[in-house]
Image (tube, rainbow, N blue to C red):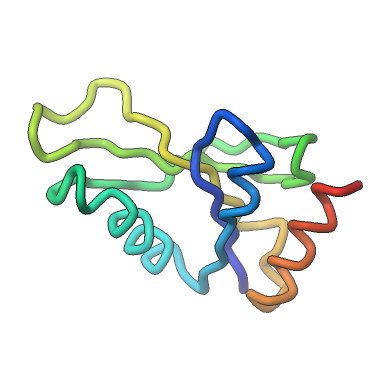
Length: 108
């Protein structure tokens, strides 16, 4: 099973260039925490359950990856989106196959 993640960027092409794949949600969240470690070492993250179809990427069940608490201020009332992931579209693929498919979908 592959979970695909892309960070939140103003440019979709840049975000997709940074796409990464993981075997589990826990691995994904560990990766995201490392991305933010220098700025917010005590931040907390989670994958939101709400999903949507993202026609730009071809992802059928896109979910928000959110920072729920930056470790400095009180927990966020409205979590900050730091990226997107898809846990369903690529679930029958290996991580390598999923990443290849992600780049193919973006070109189409």
